[in-house]
Amino acid sequence: MPKRRPDAGGFLLLEVLVAFVIAALALAVLFQGAVGGLRATAVAGRYEQAVARARSHLAAMGGRASRLVPGVQSGDDGSGFRWEVQVTPLAAMTLPGPPSAQVLLDRVSVTESWGAHRAVRLVTARLQEQASRGP
Image (spheres, rainbow, N blue to C red):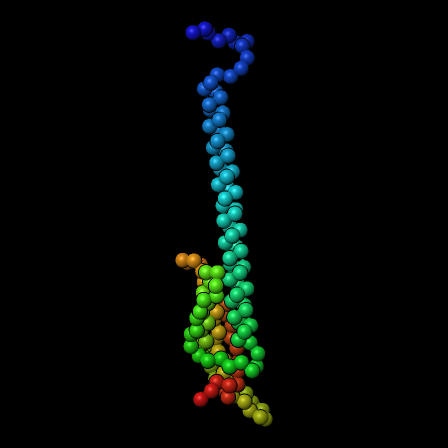
């Protein structure tokens, strides 16, 4: 086996293999970062969609003509989303002045969930006249 002269150019096979291993590790790290970024973008998109759906359920309950009924309602929103609306009475009060009116304060909670452990919850309070509650 001939000895390598100090002035000889080129790389040894071992040096080339080490360079390939370092390059492969660097590419693997870059690939993991890119895949993580794509996953985070997909999750953020699902959260955005869940918030829009929950806001839609709150808007559907809005307006003076609509009546809130205490309790829990739930259903399927499609695309893997499920919704739940919970109405809880908080307080009843009489507003002063002629004519005095009996009003109720309700807590309205809308939960939009998907997957195993992902959910968005929007909570608000809403006033309504006592007569709109029903018997």
